[in-house]
Length: 189
Image 1 (cartoon, rainbow, N blue to C red):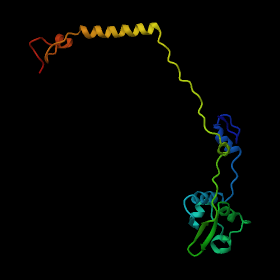
Image 2 (cartoon, rainbow, N blue to C red):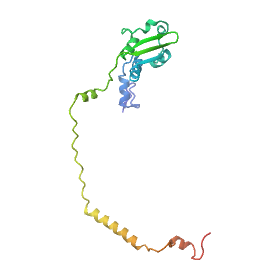
Image 3 (tube, helix red, strand yellow):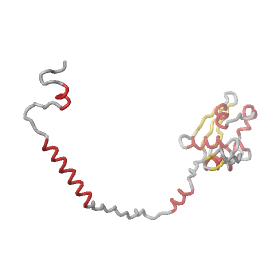
């Protein structure tokens, strides 16, 4: 936990992860969410039909009016930032229907999954796996005191068991509290 880095308030604490996001947020473009969406969909399908309204929801803003009016806005030219969004994800616009308001994207190239640097380093190492030698902990012998206490407990349990009288049949003696509460001839109803 660190003091709030945006305001400098020492009374408001933030976790280090939140503080890092506040100090150095990830740079994103307007169409970065569309790139992420198309990369995600690329794992499952080769074509995606996206209505303009859904694209508005994905990017979190409205598409410009040119997208609704002209078909040239949808050209696959890498110099425009909106086209770079789907080209970077490995997709091209195959068809645009301005009347019904949708665009069909087709996957052009398969994108490599971007893993962490640690994974890349692990993949480079091609040594056979050798497990670490682990010594099993040795069980300590119990002390003489603990052993003698254990045997004393066992003997006391045996004595108690032998001191309880055993009766043949289903006869069970009355508990002491019943003997004190009721006379031998009377029983509660």
